[in-house]
Length: 415
Image (cartoon, rainbow, N blue to C red; front, side, top):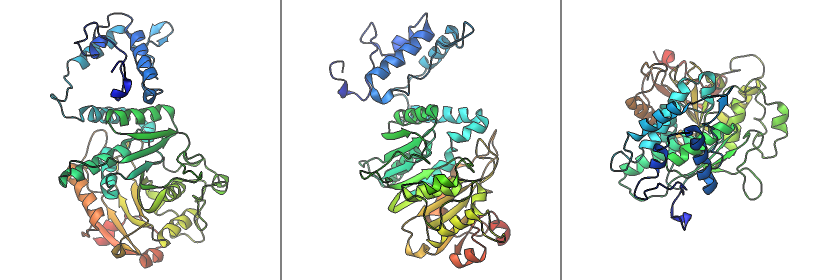
């Protein structure tokens, strides 16, 4: 391995004095200048592994404030020792224990992150429902234009692997995962998430709305089999000029600018343009995106865009979520499912599902239990009608209701 680094996925240039000892022993034996060496070692590893550059070498464990170390050596030593007490070999724990642990830490970080948490983390159960419903097959290309910490992409792979195990398929091609994130620290988090889950993902950095990085050879927008995303809700910093000046044909005539106060349907247009002819998407949006402008006299730009998607038979279903799931808001949110190749039985119809009561109380946030995840996903996949939970609505009725596609009133209507 020292002679040919290509023999291993990552080469670690840390050499224990005793070659029979694990590489971790180099870390465990640190006795002084721990912060300095914990900063140096990841940087040395990053130099040897291009994939890790800008990811594991971002933290300075030796940082000081007014001459005082932010993390003293005693605290770092205690952390190293705490990690050292756990056996993490494949004979000791399940293969994905590191990936699950990282997901747990991201969730805990989100719990303390307040308003900023929604920028990098979508609740596990929401992501899993989305992944199960878009139902990616082996080898498909999956894209998240606002990927945060990469959790939605990873859940698509997890859901696909679970499906293959039920089919007793031991050999299959993994998904090809692509994402873009504009915050540098979150971009690094997404890359690390991929690495720790042992998944191959291509994560670009930059503003997707203004400069999407994934292009084909002709410079046009690249298309994918599946798109999953949770863009920041109701962004108000994009102007009509941002839509008019787009050179990638994302904002169609008849749709286009949805108004300055919310870019929700602007993001939906980007995701629609990023789908191939048989593509499917799942997008988390503010509940208002499903109904704003409906029932009002005169025209409304957001409603006009929503109408374009309904009239072109692109909306497959809308899921209304329980409240207090997300870390940056107590609002429930919806998941909009798009399908460019709807089955004949589903054409000119939209499946509205109100899952607002399928949750358990939690601290600090509510959550959807495992059986609830399966119930919701199965209902959406198979269009299973159930009283007080969902209803299939044809386009004529949606037009009559002024293109309000929110399932929020469904329970009252059916009671």
